[in-house]
Length: 308
Image 1 (cartoon, rainbow, N blue to C red):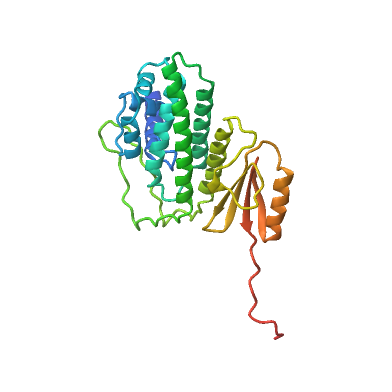
Image 2: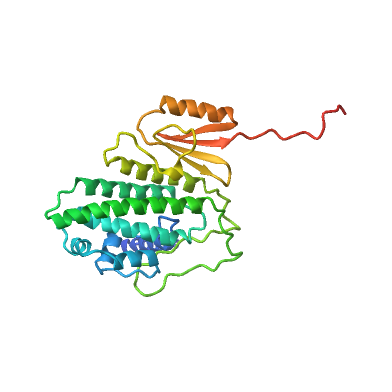
């Protein structure tokens, strides 16, 4: 008896490869959340060397590129001349691009991407300090770039703090999906928040990420040789313990605390925490050297005390 039922033919290797490529393209088209939409270190170097064009407006990054000094331009074009300076210029460009894209973040933040960007700044500043320049001019350029990048990191953290303190702007009821322009250029697009389907999120991640930036920048100033790590004046509080960054969040009354020393909380920090708890704050550890103080929730008042 003949069997007329046909056995399904498995997909060929070419078909499987095509499906995989289509899936990869679909994933790439999904817009990233800030600062995950900031061009990478390699892409920044390609832009600075004129090897890549971005289909997006980054005015701060463009102005930074226009104001580069001659030693910085030489380091960019001659790989191996001063690699630490070359990498630092790329990080400065990325910070400027991040500030441009922060305006369209809509209160949303990819904390992992933010920490990765700050870690890159940390790595580059350490490399600048450890650099052995070949000429006095390069040495002067490296010192100047270290100071400039440190200040730019402070400015970046200040702008992030200001953005975190503001509520996210409401999205359009039915935003039209954006499609990449068919120009062959790499397009970095911020993700549009969907007010209908996406759950409401606070700016807590952005606020906590800011603490990493401030603590990082304050620690850089300590490399000048001072015995005590002094946080910026804008991130201290009257009566707060030494070696501590204190960042109040006016939107919900919480306080982010970052220690500028490694290890557990110091006795001064422990005593200050107890004072805060006695005043009605709740202490929530956020990881090594980080704590979040939040106002203790009050029990709702009853309508009356009489018996029914």
